[in-house]
Image (tube, rainbow, N blue to C red; front, side, top):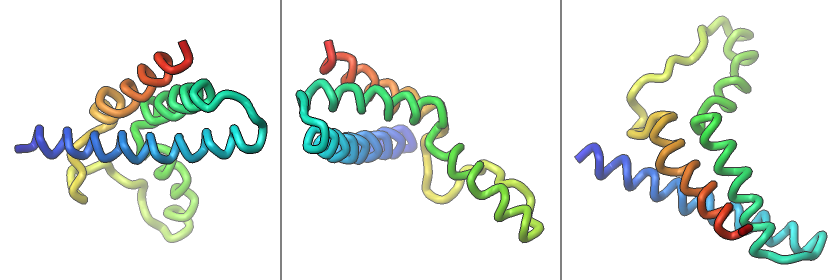
Length: 108
């Protein structure tokens, strides 16, 4: 059951990333012109690499460090909770890496 929940979460993250990247590539083409498919592929590689490297939550934790120290709170601990199933490795394998592969195939 946990595997199915993890794969479903990966699919949702993958689809959301595709929609957001398609919108960004559309804006990029509207502003600068050029081929949509190539720019969509480049943007997919960039977003896939960022998701793969950061594990999806690292940047938000880094951004909150100053606020947490201001209020005297310790750093956040990554715990299993909040309904999340995928870890950083799962996000890399099932979201970031497929985005990179699809992006490379579109550019090539």
